[in-house]
Length: 158
Image (tube, rainbow, N blue to C red; front, side):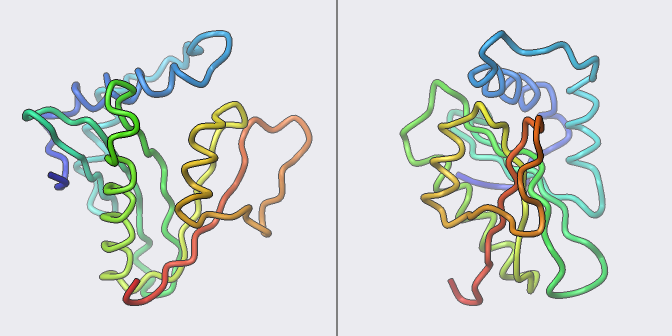
């Protein structure tokens, strides 16, 4: 089941987020100093944000966090976080979660979405390519940057 995340799930979401992120850092997950539980609670409670979660056995196994600007239809959607618990990879959760995001963007009248992905996260890059994401022509890779910027065209009635 995919639904809107609840503030009470912030701790479980933060744990999932950190497990997923740790898979693509070759030297281990860097200490960033963030209180990820508080950050996820804020993301869930933001009036301009959306956090969808895929749930199995009453626990989040996939999460997607995005914001849509208030300026009106056609504006970009910014996908901030998209993670599937590594214990649940290759089970269709990511594809179902992505589909739910796209359906929400379509319902909101959005035409495109952007995200950045870590250069060492080959698995995510391949996933996004399969979903139709392409390099963002407005944000080409910069020397030394550890992110790749991708864009997705949201088609009406997709």
